[in-house]
Image (cartoon, rainbow, N blue to C red; front, side, top):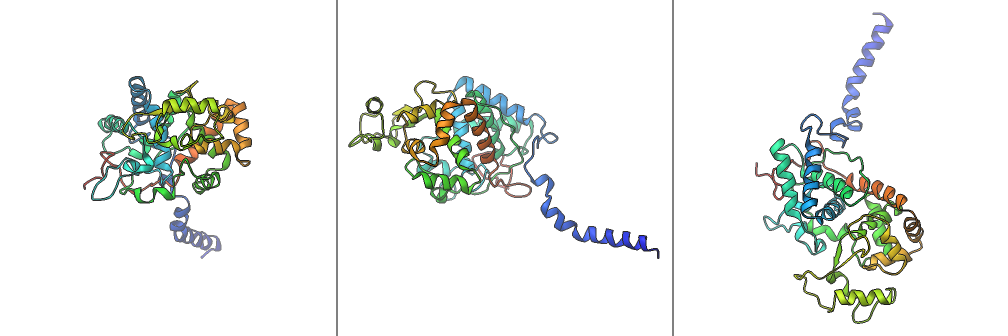
Length: 330
């Protein structure tokens, strides 16, 4: 047999022998990708965008909720919509835990899901709805539109029992906060930008009063502290009452760098906000973002994409839930 034919035969044999190994490194469809639903549900992203806009027009605060959903879902193990599961079979839901205190508008996620299901049943995951609604919600808040990959699948379990191991708390040290972000691939610059999400929305008095009572935190601007006491007049606020202060009094529903300007003036609501401005590792980024809104928005967009791609379930992992609140029954 000629040598070149033998070589070709050997090469072909080696290719098929190595094919399973190659596929481990090039999994194809199992990776997140842009326009993942182009064939299976071409209007998926447009439907989600339409719903986000409609809900924003009716309930402006939904846009803030979509951004917070992304952080609370993707910051815990995986971007897999585990956050949306209701308590069932004795397992506490993440959204019912104390760490999710103050989160709301979950019912409107179901509104978005129902609209997508009507077009393409059991095709678009709740995890992708969490990601894409956050992307479109950011635009409603005046932020940039980012390119976001899709193809996530939904978890079949809740991670409520381990939330404390993943999500940073507003009273944590800055080193711990940064380490939590770094564990999911977000660098210091990105962490500072993501905390700029505090530019919009509000904080319940339950999370503020420790800076006001029994004595005012000396790192708080005195006049601002008096304003906060007016918003939160008691050291023991009722969690069921709507007692809160806006993160930013000047542009409360616009995602901008006013947050950084405020914390440099000692007008941050949460302890983590003030630590961000005073810690030598993070303060240079705070000062730069305070001085350049475009830089802040660029870094925020970059960090949101990194967050949205944290350890997603893909391929045959998890499932596509019919109802975002419950695991499929079959």
